[in-house]
Image 1 (cartoon, rainbow, N blue to C red):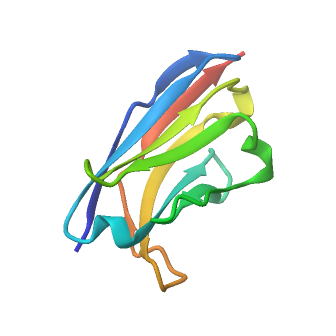
Image 2: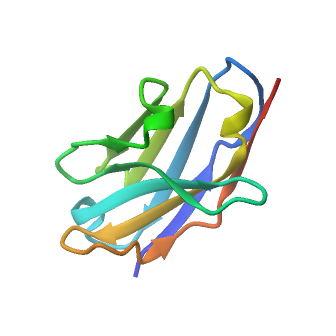
Length: 118
């Protein structure tokens, strides 16, 4: 069982930066693929970024060059550094985890709101 708790959301002006954190409890954190997703009002949840234990990152095209996902296995924490934020980045951001050999994210956090004003 893995529990995930996000923090770091808030209100920021366009062009600003925020760093989201996701603290995980449970064993074998380092073996999980960690991901960030987001859901804007009236839209479906979408993938933002992921990072496996090896550190090879994947991003949705809309955030490439602006967002950076990282993890600290010693602290059981994954981060999402967001820069050059745009109003269209406004959403609830969710942290998620899936086993390294699986395709489904089994564990989800409660979400943290990010609002970017123009």
